[in-house]
Length: 307
Image (cartoon, rainbow, N blue to C red; front, side, top):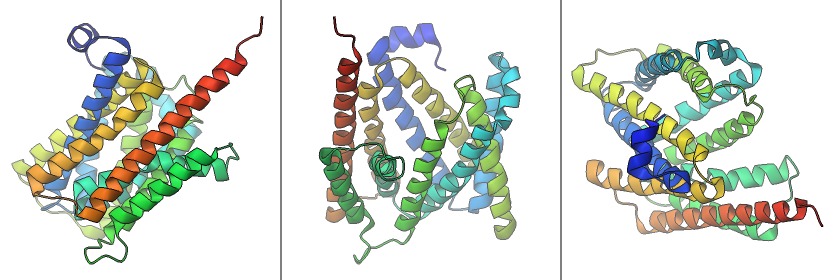
């Protein structure tokens, strides 16, 4: 967690702090993705994820101990935590494989369709009512995803389908998170997740083999681990210091960071169709969040006692 007194003086409190933490958190996640993508040019996928997650797990363990949460270590073995971590193994590996083989802006844009897919899943499988406006936004959002993936375009990258598959598992992970007891520390959940992904990556590396790495790769992976944890802590801080409905749309700033990183580091510029798809996905996602906010407000008003 960012140091409260200094951080609060610098960025304020309440919703203002929440928005700032969300924007900076997304920047940290994109920096993590960029560093690990750079390392992927010389290191096999399994070895790369394994090395990063050893460092990540070690840092998270130190944070747990330093914050006096050693007792939370046993909660890493809660059934709900294990289920979430197992799902995230698949989601993480698929996402990183896609990231290593396609522009960072495109894979991030596909990942940003998560709220749209989540809306469809809860409506179809959990039978939670979804109005026609949100269904329309979902349909338009998936049209946008199709424009990004471009399944029949000349520049089609098959790894875009891998990115889409990772998004499906991210939705399953997010749904499983609801089953975790609120007394389980966020750091404990993150540590369990890092360990499970490490085990999955080690299994993958058994088929790929390992290579010798130099200081460049170790610095890139060390930096990726650090930014991954910083991003995670900032996102937690964001939702603890402001209205969720107000803060959530700022998650889409991650796409701006990703497009900027893609251009500055790799010279990637989305083609016209992909750019149009990105605009549609973001617009649809923001509209879904807007309708969720209206729904929550209406439900709150209906639940108020009548005098």
